[in-house]
Length: 198
Image (cartoon, rainbow, N blue to C red):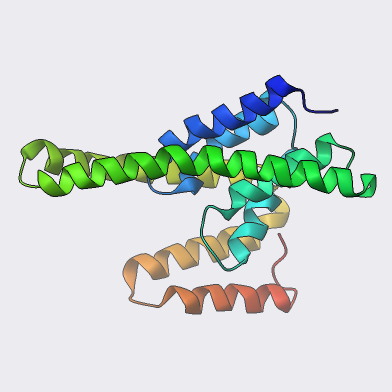
C-alpha cells in the first residue's frame, strides 16, 4: 500500500475537519480520526490507532502529539514499515507533519479569532450561551473518544481489573479532592507490578 497524491490531500483535509470538531482538545476528535484512518481507509488497525494515542499521551508535551504519531504510523505503514529504511521514515515524517498541520492550523486560527471577539463582547448573552452550550458537547465528544479507544481491547472476562480501576478512579475523582497524579502513579505501580495489563 502506498499513498497517492489524492491520499495526501485526503489525509490533510480530514485532519482539518477533525480540527474543527476538536472542541475540548484534540482527543475529542479521536472518533472521527478512527472512522477515517481505521474504518474507511484501513491505513491503521485498531491496536495501532490506540497505541498511537497511548504512546503520545505518555510522552511529555502537548496533548495533540498523538496526531503526529498517527500520521507517522500511516506514512511508515504505507511505505513498507520500519524495515523499508530511511525512505519509510521520510514518508512517516511527511505524514506526521501533514496530519499535525491539518490539525493545528484551522483550530489555532479559529481560536485566535473567536477568543479576540469573545473577549470584546463577553457581556453579550450569545457569548455566555455559547460557552454554556459547549460543556455538554465536550463531555459527549470525550465519552465517544473513550469508547473508541476501549474498543480494540474490550474483553470483559479478562479485562475486568481494568474496568474496576477505571470505576474506582472515576469515583475518587468525582467524590474526593485526590490529586490526579496520585491516581496515575497508582495505576503505573499496579501495571509495573503486573497486576494490571492492557
